[in-house]
Image (cartoon, rainbow, N blue to C red; front, side, top):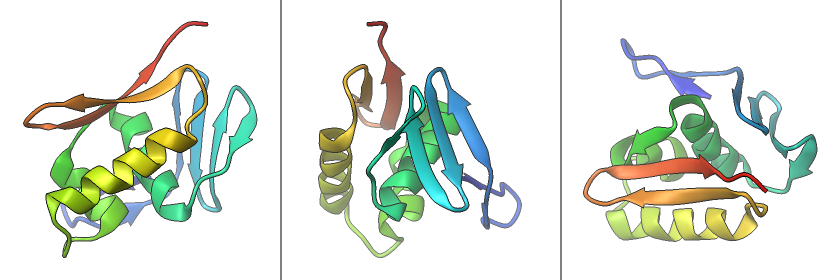
Length: 106
């Protein structure tokens, strides 16, 4: 899933980063070909990180939790997402800026 830089609309698609594949329609995420059980919002957040690598907190808030949320709600959403990710796939906090998806070799 991506956001149009001109109008802010969400665009659908498939995004890959190493062995991670995120499909926005229908929402699904795969790690090494195995589906990861995530909510649609978690898939949207992971998809944005799969597309860009590093994403601002604002970008993740707009895609994952909605514009009427506070930073604490985003932290909770990221924490919940981290718990569901398989080994080798992590989300790194980029202090003062946002979050990034990281893939480690096994």
